[in-house]
Amino acid sequence: MTMVIVSLSLFTGVDAADPDPLQDFCVADLSKDLTMNGFPCKRASNTTTEDFIYGALKRSANTSNPLGAGAVPGSVLEYPGLNSLGLSISRLDFAKGGLIPPHTHPRASEMIYVVKGSMYAGFVTTDNKLFARVISKGDVMIFPRGLIHWQLNVGNTNAVGIVTLNSQFPGFQMIANSLFGSKILDEVLMKAFFIDEKAVQQLKSIFTPSR
Ligand SMILES: *[C@@H]1O[C@H](CO)[C@@H](O)[C@H](O)[C@H]1NC(C)=O
Ligand SMILES: *[C@@H]1O[C@H](CO)[C@@H](O)[C@H](O)[C@H]1NC(C)=O
Image 1 (tube, rainbow, N blue to C red):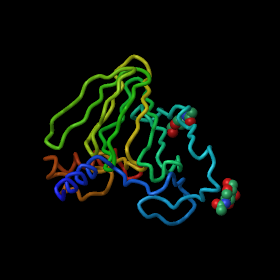
Image 2 (image 1 turned 90 degrees about the vertical axis):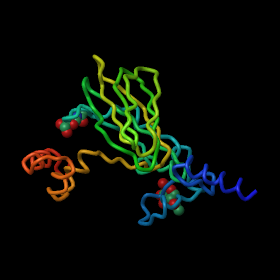
Image 3 (image 1 turned 90 degrees about the horizontal axis):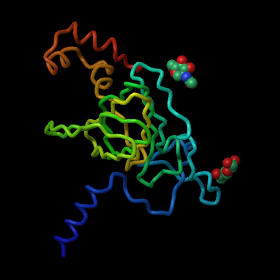
Image 4 (image 1 turned 135 degrees about the vertical axis):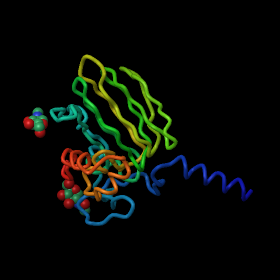
């Protein structure tokens, strides 16, 4: 019996990204300067249908940037009704050739549904195995929790995807920006990438801390 309980709880730990809620809902009260693995709840008596509806994904993201891609986020910060429910959603827009560059979500697995166009999407495992191909309108693809992944518009039109993640606040860590835009000592980057100081400086000038 003990073994069964242990293995069940192990499975649950792997399966769920955010902890299970202890109430029906807990619409985040973002005005409170207090967090404890989420946000405090808005009073249930003051909660309305509108707290559970999010209209921002009707509009496309601005893709007029060097990457030609953008996101309309729908994490707990923009959509407080998600608080404690272990879910979030975003809309991705790509101009022709646009790229959401390699990044990870440390707290969530992701699923993309391609609404329009086609994109070369993929992820790399912790042992550097690549899982990638072109996905197109109607396809769904999974990017497992924490793994480096990206989407590149390879079609002749703009592309649109809707992503859902199993965390209310998945985290978004861009690999290049984290390494070259965070003021890590040059010596670390020179040794890690086998490049000289000039190359490090050049990359650092692209990925400034503010970008
Ligand atoms: C209830 O909602 C109203 C309207 O959003 C707000 O003005 C009021 O402060 C809220 N009351 C509580 C107790 O949260
Ligand atoms: C999109 O972003 C660019 C660059 O920041 C800006 O100049 C432009 O006004 C934005 N377009 C819209 C429609 O917001």
